[in-house]
Length: 120
Image (tube, rainbow, N blue to C red; front, top):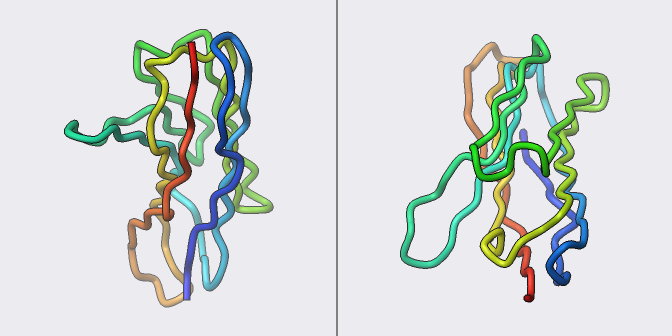
């Protein structure tokens, strides 16, 4: 069974850095894209960064120049390097993956979420 496992959340001060990691495992034929989303209570989940299998990347405007997403297709992992963190980056961050399984099913998976707290 395919699953996503996240790691790397925590509490930091403004201006510091964190790195989030997400590993996909179990019956994957190919990854189309992986990404990170975030959500704060009372607001909709928003896309933070996406990287596709062709290497193309998309970032939400508020993190451009501060966050970098990287994909390792050999390991089926995606990392989000977050620099110059701001209090407004505080949220639960969710890993997302679009893939074909070994049964040739197209699936979209979500991780369990990891909390990032940035104090001022």
